[in-house]
Figure 1 (cartoon, rainbow, N blue to C red):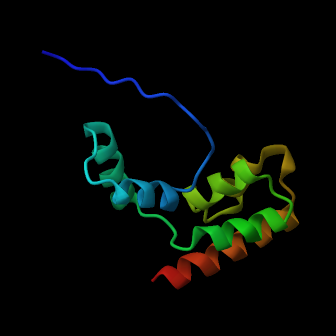
Figure 2 (figure 1 turned 90 degrees about the horizontal axis):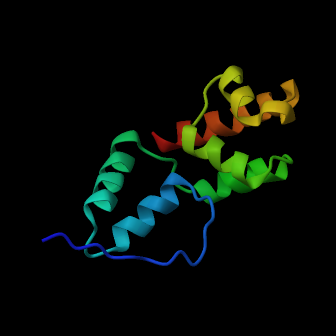
Amino acid sequence: MLFCSLMEIIKEEPITNEKAYQILAKQKQLSYRAERTKKYLEKIGFIKNSDEILKQLVDLGIELEKAIMIVNTMPKTNDEVRAILEKDYTPEIGKKVLEIMKKALSSEK
């Protein structure tokens, strides 16, 4: 017998991988999909204290959704930053983003 539970979406918002992991880690019992997501996040890793980095990126004038993508993908090159920011990309912003990410990634080690 197959059971299906329906859940109502109350709020939808983009979140960092760190926040997603924290939410899943608090749960006592996870569905198969949630457990796989948690294991995936453990495997790929995520930046701790991502809220601080997110604030720095938003302070540069980067919109929140794109800042979250930057934090989640952890870009290491200008091309990677350009792909995320698209039309909002400038060489100055790209350089600042890479400096922020380099500092964040080096403090993780």
